[in-house]
Image (cartoon, rainbow, N blue to C red; front, side, top):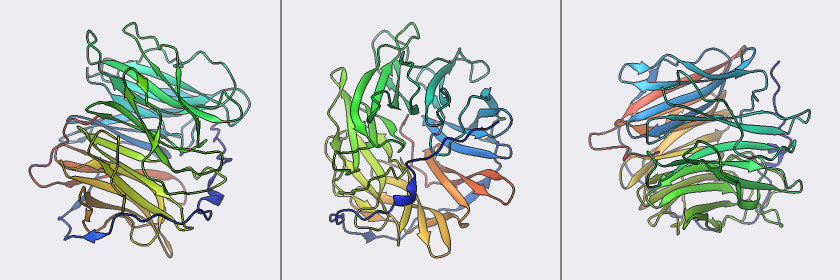
Length: 412
């Protein structure tokens, strides 16, 4: 039986009135480049959910859940001929099907794969345990799954993401895992653990001791090391986007990407997205500050230490669920859910570090589409999203060729 985790902190208050929205970068439009959207045959079966895209160099992995009995985590790789046949990472009645808490299949520099997914943890529907497994034969076989911590509390351990720490003497560096952790009972924290050469996780450490309780976090690999972005939570219930860097063997104190001043006494279930290209970092996020939803993107030229004023990417109003990736040294592609009378749309536009914006391109018109993702690899943008029908959910994929000269730049 499939058990959906309750989004108890859900989005009924998503657009709660907060502090006035601070000034953002002036909106400067430019003629959009030609983006011809081409549908791709999806490798996913019916009743799919929780799509995720991961890129490293020229390789792109698409992962998703299939709500069969039992639930299965599957993945496929992009090839010049289309998507490879799907492979199963894990199939288990304990695997949690939650559209917000998305499993991950990531690529490592040594060519191996790392998978993270949440499983049930006792009778409490809000309790979960994070499982991690690796594959060195492109997903044919997987190591026994284990948690990256020793804590046995029946609380939330979820929203996992992987990163890599460069380390002399280790092929491709050491794998790290970061997640939301509820063992402190009165607050949600972010914790991280790094795996040693023996394949075992080291002692987990606190990255930040009070964060939003069910907004997904995101990681990126910059020139100076891994970065984490997340929705913070202050004692006054201000829930803006913060960033921390791994520097000198530890995580730096988190700082605001931008002080939106969004005060909301509930989790909006709407996390940020991040992409790094060398020391250039782009962070996209949703805010309801001022009482109306908008999606923003901001740029850092110094590895995430400082950010310029954000650029608004939506046209009228946004439901968020942002996604971002670099197209070249000066431009990112940003995706978001645009809210219009009568429905919502998955839209994408290119935004320059100088604040310029291309026209918005609609990837999916129907208001039944949700959970958009995009990545850039091999000179193309790849998109995925879910389309709901009266009887099932279908995972869709598409591509758009980019002009010659655009390269992925070896992003993780």
